[in-house]
Every structure is written in C-alpha cells, then in structure tokens.
Length: 403
Ligand SMILES: *Cc1c(COP(=O)(O)O)cnc(C)c1O
Image 1 (spheres, protein in one colour):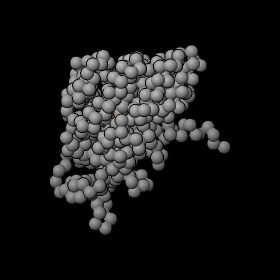
Image 2: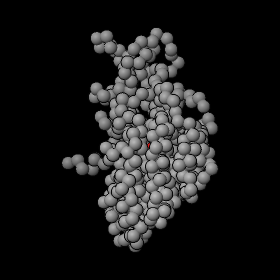
Image 3: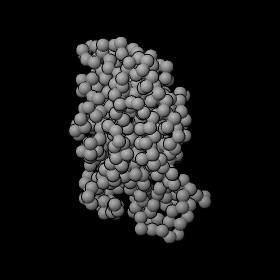
Image 4: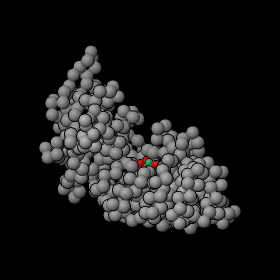
C-alpha cells in the first residue's frame, strides 16, 4: 500500500518510523502457508521490532514469540501471545531470567551451553518444576552473510557443537528437572542462499533421528531459527515455499512440529524511516545532505555498513553524489555514502526503506536525542503506536538524584 509520508510528517512531525501492518500480515501468512503440510509454529523474533502493537498484531494472526531476554518474554505475554508459543533463547541468561521463564511456564528455554543447562536444572529443582528445554546446536556451516550477523560457525559464540549437544541431551534425559523437548539452530541473519540452510537442517535432523534411535529421546520441536533475508537493494531471495520444502524434506521419518523464528522477514520491508532535510553543504567537493534523523535512530548503516534505499519525496531532478548524514557527533553517523540524490531544500522529506527490522529496537538516546515516534498504518488508517520521547522522559530516572 502507498503510505502518505507527507501527511504523516504533518501530523506526527519527523523523524518517525511507519509500519505497514497489512504487509506484516502478508509476510506472516506467506510463511505459515509454506509450512502447512505439517504442524508448525511461527514464533516471531521479537528483537527485530518489539513495539507492543507490532507484537500484538502478530499474536492476533496466531504467531508465537522468540525472545532473547525476559523483557521480551514479558512484552509477548503482555499483548496476549499464549505462553505455550513463547521460546526463550540467548547465550547469556541470568538466574533471575531463567527462574521467571520457568514461572511463566513458557513453551521452552533454548539452552546454549552445558553450564547453562546445569543452571536451568538447578533453578527448576529449586522451583520444584520440570523445565522444557531445547538445545541450540551450532552446525558449523557458513551462512554466507555479513560476519556480524553470522551465527552458525564454531567461531561464533552461539550454540554448542554436535558432540556437546548429545552429552547435554543425555544429561537432560537423566535429570528429573529437565524435559528435553526441542532442538534448535539459527545460522545467521539476512540469508539469501538456501544451500547453507539445507546443510544445517540436514545435520540437525540427523541428530534428531540419532537421539531417537540410540537414546530413546523423542523431540517434539524442530526449530530452524530465523534468518530469511529480505530485499534491501537488489538481492535475490530464497523462495519461501522452497525453504519450507527443504526443511520438511529433512524430516523424513520424524513426527515433529516445525518451529520457525523469523524477525526481519516479517517486519523488515514493512517499515520506513522518514526524516527531514535540515541543510545541504559542500566540504571541498563533497556534498552532504544533513537530516534530522541520525545513527541513534537507525543504526544499521553505521553498524554494518548496511544499505537502505533512500529517496527524496516529490523530487527527481538535478541529481548528484552525496552523503546523507545526521546531526550526531560521530563520523559514523550516516545513512548512505556516495549515493545520487536530487538537490534538496530545507524541510524536504527523505524516506529510508526497509527499516522495519532492527531499526527502532536498536535506537538509543545518544546525544540526548529522544527516540522517535512510531506509527502503524492498517487498512488505510494511521495511528500512533509509540509517542516521541520528550526531554522530560530522558531525564526522568536521573533528576531525583540531583544535589
Ligand atoms: C535474531 C534471531 C532470530 C531472527 O533473525 P532474523 O534474521 O531477523 O529472522 C531468530 N532466532 C534467534 C535465536 C535469533 O537470535
């Protein structure tokens, strides 16, 4: 759907994020449909965009939640994601987080080390519970994505190798306080090639069959993680149907529920970051377009050198090369370098596409900049889903300590 950025700018000021909720529904349904041959659960990776209204919207479609902190678990519960659709992952869960997850009785805790497994067993024992767990296996395949978002190689900190996983399943089976129900792998993000996924799921499925035949451990959930890529520039994507088929093909002989944890795929292309031109200037022969949004609002270009498509609204003439930069005092504060943009004037609007995932959730208050407004558009109607932060919001937790 075409969103009227100008109207929204007049109504809510800039910068802002806007999300097309109908597009989010479409992406969710596409993936859910692709897995329809089997029991499946699409657990949305909350870290991609954790706005309560976004998570609530997905909960209404039937999505579960994949969480990487107890805060995310609480967000999911708050907006009505059923506890039996919530997964808690992450390499470094605190005792307190583990305890709370057990008390909330979520679907499973996704364990990422032997030490953590012992900790979960201990917490469960103290609470007199049996913890449903899955183990994150690191299959050591190269996902062929940006090194910062690659997670499936032994050199990455995530998961455990196959032998360790096997030992952990044996430990869990013997423990009165652990119930091994799942297996998990997530090899990276923004994946655009099917082959590494195929390799990974085949390794994991073999382990599942092996656990079943050799150790009589019957897992109920096969969690293939997230990672499906989206179009930022001109990427060729993995076909969703082929992706699902590849996963399902690996599971021959197994009666197991497929779990998938997409984040970016669901919300990435639904979101646009809209910012306003403040000034143009030329340093030497370098042209800069200075906008009111900055790296603290949308970090991906600074962090990953990520590409986002940038357009000046209602202008197309007189293009020349420029850098689009924000007001923050860092040379890393840019949205794009050396791109062709038309000549701009004060108050022209600039749209930065594909900003729905890892956009607002990575925002900070650096330079005492309030976080921007978030807006939803659904059925042609817009509504605010997070207010712009004020100066008072920013100092609220400090003010009382002034002497
Ligand atoms: C980040 C993450 C995801 C989601 O990744 P996307 O690339 O956004 O789909 C899924 N599972 C786990 C464990 C994650 O850490």
